[in-house]
Length: 205
Image (cartoon, rainbow, N blue to C red; front, top):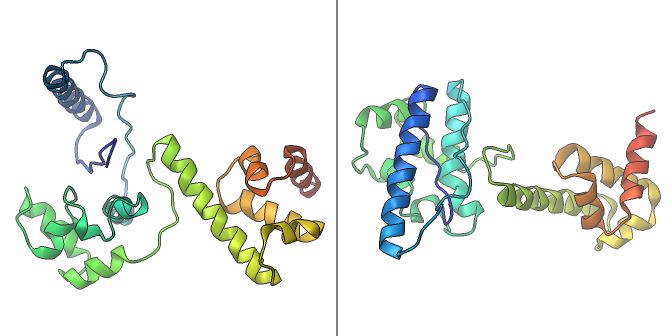
C-alpha cells in the first residue's frame, strides 16, 4: 500500500518477529542512507494476527488482494502491480508454486472460481491501521444510513432525525453494525453525544 504492506506468512511467532525486525532494520538503514535522513522510518511495531483456519485464510487473501481497490489506488485487483493477485489469474511465476497450488486447490484449481470468490462482498474487519479502519467504518455507516433512507422513503438524513422513533432505530443500527463509537455516530448524524447515550440507555432496560 502507500504507507504499509500486507504479508501472509506461515511461520512460528518468534521466527516471524525476528525476521520482520531484521527486514525493517535493513530497510530503514538503506532508506536513511539513500535519503540522507536519520531516525525511525516506521511509525509502529508491525501488527500480526493468527490465521487459524482455511476459511479465514481465504478471507484474508481476498482482503489483501482487494485492499488497493478499497483504498482507491487501483480499479481492479489485477491492476495493482505489487499484489500477487495478477500472478494467480495470469499464471505467472509465484515464488513458491506449492503456495499457488495450495490456494487454488480450494477452488478446484479454477481461476474463475478464484476470481469469483474475490468479487464477493466482505464487510469483516481485518488488520487495519487506525485511520483506515475509521474510514472503512464511516463508509459502512453511510451505507446503513442510505438503507434507512430507502426504507422510510426519504432523501435526506435530516428527515430521518425529525421522527424520534426512526432516529433511534438508525442510531441502534449504526451501533450494532458500523463499529463506530458513540461520539463518531453523533458527529456523523450531527446530533448531541448525549442523545446517542440516552437512546442506548433506554434500550438497555
